[in-house]
Image (cartoon, rainbow, N blue to C red; front, side, top):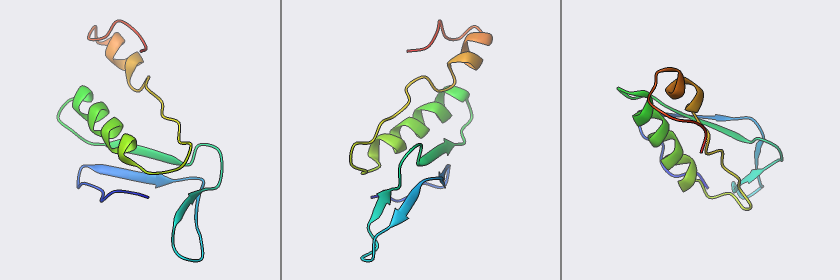
Length: 81
């Protein structure tokens, strides 16, 4: 299930489907891309991660290494977490 999408978040579907009753399901693979827009890269990353964590799909997996290369390039992050 997708929570309501805030105005500063975009959700791109790549591998989702709906059952006959309208329930959102994973069709396999990387099924959603969540992008947030904010004043800073850190805020955008945090908003994107918070929304992705709130998505209700069975057996979901999340990436936790978002934006680390750019933050490291800017000297604001030591590496991937």
